[in-house]
Amino acid sequence: MSVSDKKVGQLIDDAMARAAASSECCKQVFIAFRDLQTQRQIPGNSLDLDLAAAEHYLFSKHIVCSGKISPFQMRIVVIGYDAKKLLDKLNKDPDKEQVTINPVSPPDANVVLWGIRGVNDGSKEHDRCNKGAKPPLWASIEDVFGNKPKF
Image (cartoon, rainbow, N blue to C red; front, top):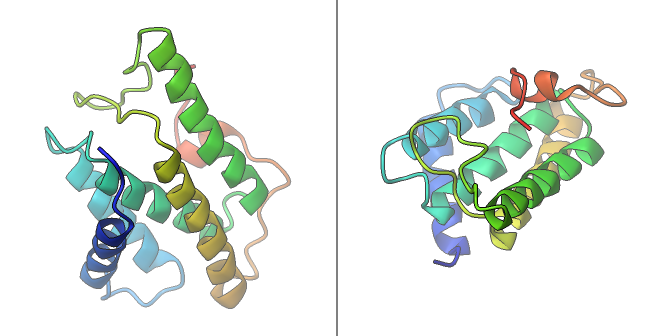
């Protein structure tokens, strides 16, 4: 299954439209991210790479816009997460990073590219409306994801 940029863009636009009630800087992106995250948690949706790409885009955009971590660190997180999923797949444990009952989506270069695009757009949004939020030089993984990772 390949990623359709057109479908990913539509998923993002639709989620942002549903979150349009919030005009607070970065908040609309966060609400749209949570919307798509909830959709991915529906059994059968976790392997939809278009939905994964849209969710990863919005997550990256929100984290960088909010100033939680730097664009540099978020790029490392985006690429590192996919590399970790590839290693898990090669080690015959593709669901090692599983956080719900659903399987983990497979590593995919196009999903990574959407995550990087989210970093870039989040950086522009941060500079536009949230410049006062200064990301730390380096944040712990717990600060990024809110819990301790399993690796």
